[in-house]
Amino acid sequence: MAVVKVDMTKLLDIERRAPGRIDKAIAKLALTCQAEIVENFSASSPASPGQPPGIDTGTLKNSVLTGRVKPREHKVYVGQNVEYAIYLEYGTLTEDGSTRMAARPFMLPAVERTKRQVGAIMESVIEG
Image (cartoon, rainbow, N blue to C red; front, side, top):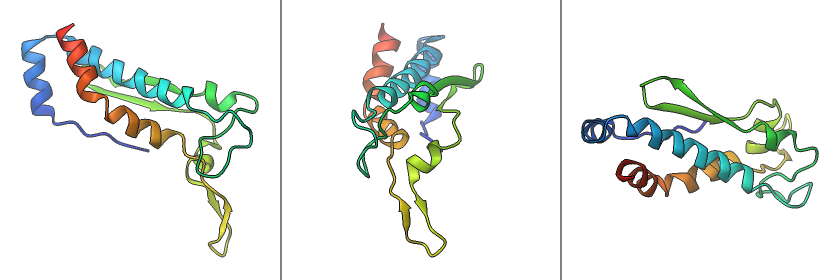
């Protein structure tokens, strides 16, 4: 699971200046990350190693979800609920350690793309 850490002192300062907007900004970040994942599946199935997985039945793509961990704790999650997602994200190895299936990452690249948008998203919601 990828974890994005945010300096809470800055968030708390923003919360004092713009009450209630932090939760909206964090929710928007989660939805942005979800969209990054869903919109970047490969057009071909099976996908080439290193590329996001292709769409076969659509189950994986449709399983991407977001939610709040606890109200007012400024925490959300972005994940999926299919058991084979981890094998696509990280690939698999044989007993001797050689690659059985190369990774087809789709979650972590989306998190990285979303991290680059944090400042703009926070600013747009807080000022907005």
